[in-house]
Image (spheres, rainbow, N blue to C red):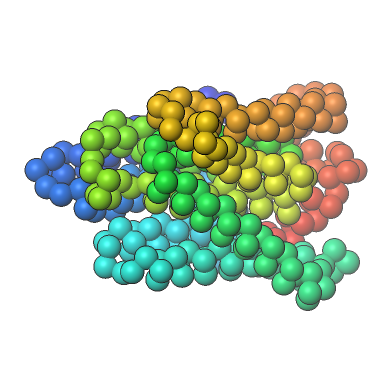
Length: 330
């Protein structure tokens, strides 16, 4: 069974390490410019994630053997490097977005590498299906990333970051209930690192000039990539439904509701509250339905703590999931 105490310890450790890093960044920049704040955010998030994933004992290997390991060893470092390079402000904005778009387009192929879908088995896809999935998923990811980044420029604040983290936490819990425990676990340190960096950073640097680097592109980029990857893994290597994955992925876009004229010029705290309220509604619905299905289909079969490791063989409906994960592990 999942160890809730271990989860709490990993979350706490991740948040503490990220917080300490942000505080150190604040101390170093107290007498200097905040031009490179994004670089400090990358360091804070990276250190927090390293500690959190170490405490969860997520097994890594090189070369990575499955989608989760590719997410941890290839995808996350890639987006952190992109945001690190962007943080130096030496490249034009269009070139930074070229790197982001490239990552978004190849990300589905990275996660699907060596999976049953690409191996020509009875569950394999035709070539046009592979390209279609990659294109549709890539466009969705680019659209989400671009729209949230644009909204951050129009109406700065922590609410957009918090909305992404709410969705990521919902994704992790839902993927766990979709019978991919490790896939869901990966969301917990990610949420903790981003949340700690967002809150502490906003408190320390809230008086920064708008012309200065506020670090939010890092939070948005890492958050969106992490959210998409966890949902993608849960959908294709767990039993997360397409409908649930899409609702969770697109929920942060409801932050745009505050751009309608009656809400646009309200006080920032009111705008942020409305954003989080609208984002929370579909996420709570997805969690409720996932918990209901879990209680109906899985919970009655759990008779002792030794059941979970056998769950894929005990449930006939999980046979396909077992075959997918076994193929990826080879």
